[in-house]
Length: 402
Image 1 (cartoon, rainbow, N blue to C red):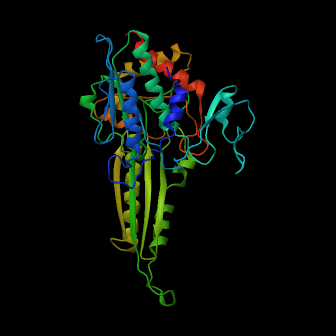
Image 2 (image 1 turned 90 degrees about the vertical axis):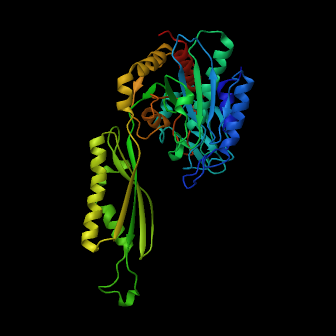
Image 3 (image 1 turned 30 degrees about the vertical axis):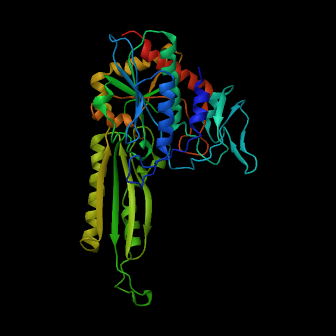
């Protein structure tokens, strides 16, 4: 039986970054290369119904005791476009508390003084990169942990629930649930295996929206511009300055929401700004959107109607209201965590998962830890021992009595 770390190291060899500018599904065809490899692997281990659909979603079933619930485990195959994701040079190092040299040639070190989470992993074996790419533990660790647990169920003879497996593309660009076939999946409830630190279970996430503003100005030669030029860039800066500085990501934590300016470009005639809007509380989320509308109205009254065109689109909502009526799903996971030596902690997600949208599609789907740290960056790492413990957690969820 292949270890979870061996599986993971194979999977990170696939470049599966998604592309938020693409209009196809999946957004990058290379995600299907991993999908096809996973289907072949699943069939080889005895998951006879494993397949990948036209959209790049991978499904399969490990039949179990029909008297137990049908439980889904879901992870995403794509990796974030926030850092380079190809030619990943992963290796395992034993962490003794000293600085880890990721790349001697470029002087890149992973240091506890920079990343406090390392203090929790003394004596463990960390999978790291060479400091020039992300690792891809988000969420190939989840994929590896699910399939390692599935192989155990297939070979151990232990009584277990029927397991439904789902691997999605494009989660990192917000499209992971777009074509997920909940009805055909056939689970009573599910878990996304897409979290971080061991012991974390998440069923509260941000309400999320995206906003885009286009600012219109008037260009004229600066030598004769007095009382004539309207610089759209300055108006865009004025708009941004009217949003509360205290509600930016760098000044918030926990349940606090934010406006995050993600893109800006422009010239005198036209400028564009883009934001993401986040808040756990629906009322405060709506107030944030209303504030942006009121700022746009102010700008248009000051400079003339049509100076700014604001578009706001909701992305996903807090799954809490979908999970609260079925809290036994959370309790099952917490009991499994405690049984394998984890300290279960309910943590609000300062982001979103496929599980949030799937919960609104009728499939209750909290999010479970994978053990990874520092996601979406060049200093991402994951302890081998924590991955192994997460596999035990998944097995416990699937084998524990009702």
